[in-house]
Length: 100
Image 1 (cartoon, one colour):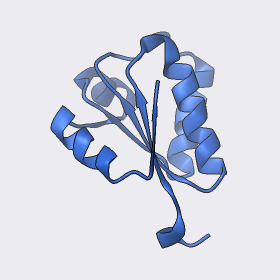
Image 2 (tube, one colour; image 1 turned 90 degrees about the vertical axis):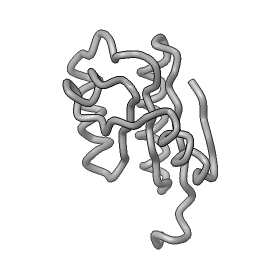
Image 3 (tube, rainbow, N blue to C red; image 1 turned 45 degrees about the horizontal axis):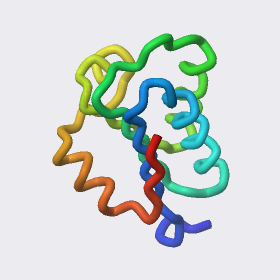
Image 4 (cartoon, helix red, strand yellow; image 1 turned 180 degrees about the horizontal axis):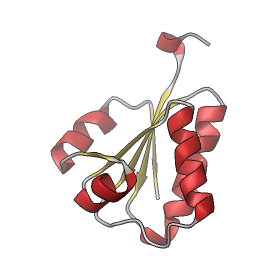
């Protein structure tokens, strides 16, 4: 599938209890040929185990992009830090928005 015809998805993870499902959905959509931007908003990732780290590394490897407005996620886990306004701008360009 060529780059311009790929659908863009924004995965928004605001519920701490849904961080695994949001990441799994992000990886799944990437494997289906979508461009994915994952946003972890308003909290630091907790209980980051080896499986979660592996899935984040795989998301990075296959071209997904991770953003967070929490600076701890940027410093500890390699997310790109964004403000809420910057996140909103990016989300507006998505074809599909999936909240968690």
